[in-house]
Length: 151
Image (tube, rainbow, N blue to C red; front, side):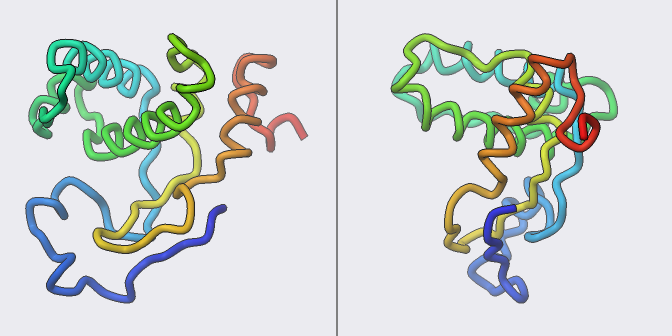
């Protein structure tokens, strides 16, 4: 797991109620979600980006709740989709026109991930990138077994 940088406590600068409502407690595990919810949000975000190529558009949590299946944790879906998007944007220049595979959505839905703290500098991504790719490869090859299940 990557090096963690979590604050010892919320300071006045990081205690923003509106923002805290959208994320979990820094350092705690992000709940796993249904891959279909990440995929649905991803598709919505791509459509929105095509309509607004200059950006400047945000998606309200209520809209995310509507996009996801009933009972889904919209915060966790959004956060996990954001991490997949971040990774996608990092590798996108090397693979023009590619979209995440079904395996990537499945692994993003369950990978070990912790909430980041607001205003806390991160040393790298908040998940193990090598493990992500290994599990995506394994998902593609064995139809879903994780590294631990194959051992």
